[in-house]
Length: 219
Image (cartoon, rainbow, N blue to C red; front, side):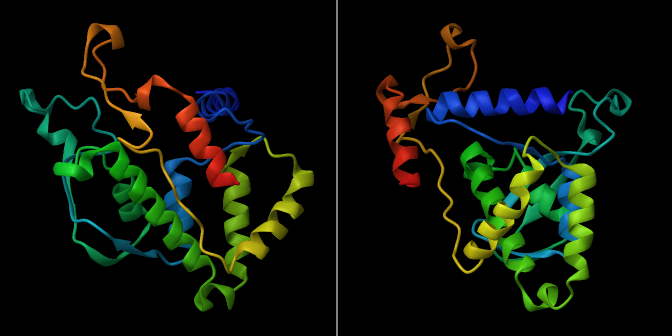
């Protein structure tokens, strides 16, 4: 996959949904995500809801025939998280953030988005913790990892301004919001009209609902 083309398409899609320009984008692959978390010694995530996923895909077994098993059970593993404070290494955090087939409400895309926000918050907290601040060499290691692995269209002339902005915001709590059903979105019944797919549409089929919500957050 061409990551550069992916940046253009991602920005175009988000701009279409939000009705706002997207100037820059960044691609961070799963391996880099896990390595970054391991570099800071893991993260402490406040798991809000217990999770059980019996169909988490095992890397490398996507095409395993499982000796004729019609359920292809050998392709998957069971992952489980209890509610509460959980210390996660990179691999565990990746599973927590990626899980798609959890039992109950945690199997929805909305829940997955919320879990990803929890991991991002935990990573930020870890970056600003005394254990990391007192060992500045870790920041250099992170910089080397990210510059060698991340694909972005951010011009290097913006690096310092963005870094300065991050320093100003380090003592503030980030605000995480997501489009939700039924506030801004609704889920129509599956039908040939939508390719028999599970989709979300703007409430009342009016995209202005989404535009107003996003612009309100930014203002």
